[in-house]
Amino acid sequence: MLNKYPMWKYLLLSFVVLISLLYAAPNLYGEDPAIQISATRGANVKLVTLEKVEALLIQANITPKSTVLENGQILIRLTSSEDQLIAREIIDEQLGDGFVNALNFAPATPAWLAAIGGTPLKLGLDLRGGVHFLMEVDMDEAVAKAQEQMVQDFRSELREQKIRFRGIRKANTETGVILRFKDEVILDEAIAHLKPINPGLQFVDSETNNEFVLTISMTDEKIKAIKEDALQQNLSILRNRVNELGVAEPLVQRQGSDRIVVELPGVQDTARAKEILGATATLEFHPVDSVTDINDALAGRLPSSSIIYRERNGRPVVVKKKIILTGNHIVDAQSSMDEFGRPQVSISLDAKGGSKMSRFTKNNIGKPMATLFIEYLPTGKKKANGKAEIAKREEIANVATIQAQLGRSFRITGLDNAAEAHNLALLLRAGALIAPIQIIEERTIGPSLGKQNIDNGIKAMTYGMLAVVLFMFIYYRKFGAVANIALLLNIVMIIGFMSMIPGATLTLPGIAGIVLTVGMAVDANVLIFERIREELRAGKSIQRAINEGYANAFSTIADANITTLITAIILFAVGTGPIKGFAVTLMIGIATSMFTSIFGTRAIVNALWGGRNDIKKLSI
Image 1 (tube, rainbow, N blue to C red):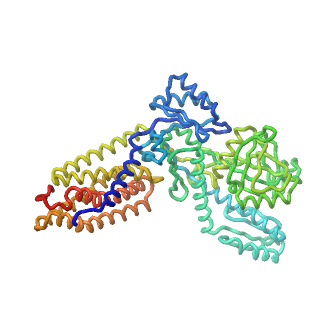
Image 2 (image 1 turned 90 degrees about the horizontal axis):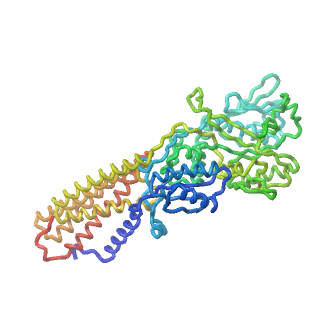
Image 3 (image 1 turned 30 degrees about the vertical axis):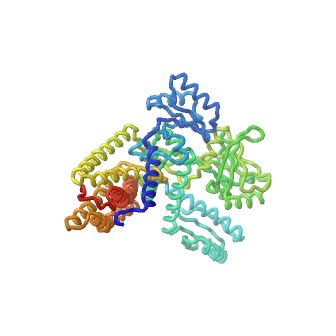
């Protein structure tokens, strides 16, 4: 029978609509102004901390909606932004520097809805407010570190193969290494061993002052690969660092060849956000040079293979330039107290790092090993090329005697206090930055501006919807009312699906995408209804006109939507930031509008007019 759907199609439509309504519902509950308290620099968030915070709020006559201690963090929900600001100021003053107190927003979704995964639509920075940072990666330092690693690797390789060399040092070009040999036979032997295992390097030999010199330089492709590697690894590490500190829905993405954009929606405190991202510390493990006398070293009589570093108290330590291990191999780090109540950091390495540490400690039991703490600090100055200048601070964190062969797990002691241990563990756990970064631009978008953007976007969508609804109802009468129902369902489905999709974020351009989708959804119904009118004018029966109207309009609607979908996919692939937000909303909107305008309205039309022979005239 024409224009009759089987029951399963109605059930499918009902299921999709129900799921969309269910997952769009959390957006009706909004968000509460909140304060998120987490530990830093050695402090622990415990039940006693929560009790202290609750007492401070009572003293200030502030009644929170709720206070919860979960996953080592306290979340305080408040009734207004004014209470939020006052409470944060009081908590900052009373708890001290051991805690990060970030202003945030917490979803007010009921527990039963949250239990099935219902969450509000994630809002972008332009709608929710927050902080935006543009960070620059120091690529010169990345190349310099690679050059230093070349020196270490070549020295180790030649010694393992028992190829004698007179000296090895970095070239002045900052992209190469110079090795000196006493005769040409040894030089050729070194080239024969090093060249096959070091692709991407150029080998040039020469003779100077009765010495044979080998200059090994990085190719342009190698330098480009090092810089790309540094950017990608720093991206990954920054994401880990933001996630480690519990910032909700962050955006961390590259911009150009040496910059990274970080956006933290909902975070209203730039200083706190800087604390999250600004730390650029890592560790290196070096053998201690026990042979060189410290006084000779301070007088300048220092072997080329050694270097002087100082401990925090200023005491000099002579260590070998050879790096046993870097922080890149650390997969986990936890701060705690040892058996004597002293702070320590327990470290776990990846398989490659564990092998390196095991080999070295096996052959050096009873010898000292130094842990070098490296930190990059902004100077506020610019280099000649206009890039931000960063100062490198290095100090010995501790010197320990190797008591036994170490594996993938060991601990660092000798730290000043629990605060330092906790902070170091946090940075190591989040990852050591391959190259230092510096914030070169920062921008704060207040929640009031975000609210204004939302209000303006909703107004635009509402006015557009009203105009479309009135036109459809007046021009197409009852069929126009069906189209309007489908239009409302379309918006509900867009919001519901965007709330369900992990990572989908609604931005101001995204609202524009929804408005555009509303027009496209109506356009499909207009095509269908006009085709039904044509069939009726051609003298066909009402049931035949409805059937052919939907069937014949489908190809036109599909063509128009597919071309728009391809455009949206291209925008998503090549665009960044707001462009991606617009593309995501548009793609979801195209899918939902196709569903509602064809399948949805057809189901309603079939239920109201389908299969009826008593209809003399359609209200269209």
